[in-house]
Length: 138
Image (tube, rainbow, N blue to C red; front, top):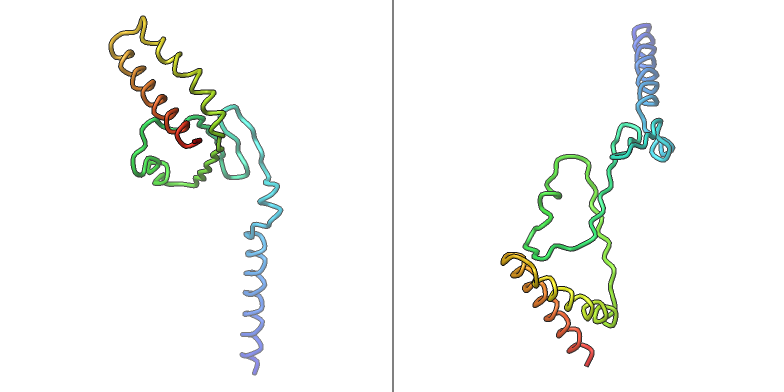
């Protein structure tokens, strides 16, 4: 009986020490919302033990192949990727292309052969897109 009592006291001490240890180790919701350290630098931000960096990409790649973002998705570490795509009206795109196509044509005037071909390819793509937009409105 005495051994059982001593054994229970020993178990209670172990349980209490585990509870104290667990209380110290638990990350609360408050800790996530308001970390101990918030340090803003020009290149990054430190939030507690985590570092944060935001990169904004304005334009979509000209030529997209399957898994074009695979390098980012395979990155080892804590990485979040968010895509924000805004739809433009056909009317707005037609206005934009009506301005862009002549500008693309004027780039070829004093350009070297490589730049001329790049500008011509961009102009053809813009003209095709304009044709598709006009056809879809009919």
